[in-house]
Amino acid sequence: MGLRGEVFRRIQENILNGVYAENEELRENTLAQELGVSRMTVRRALDELTREGILYRTKGMIMGPETYYERTGACPNV
Image (cartoon, rainbow, N blue to C red; front, side, top):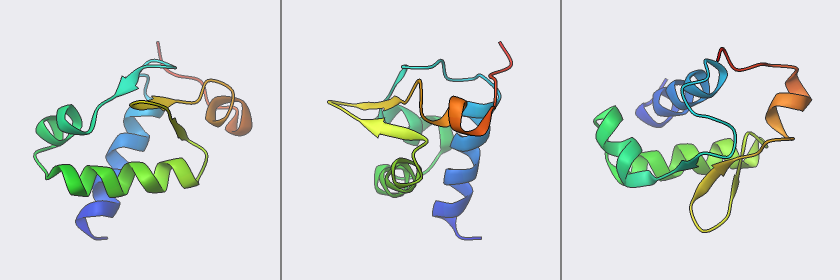
């Protein structure tokens, strides 16, 4: 698994584990710092998460409240 795939997996796990709240704005710069990777790597992972319907884009990056959780039946561990 490449670096982008690893970042994709870590962000997806954070969503499933309730680290990010539904509708929380996820900023590329913040995620890049937290994960210790470049902003471009984060952007590519977020693009893939968007294509899979886990996130949706507005001005920033926001988790879709009715897409991922309802589609998969996953519940955040809050």
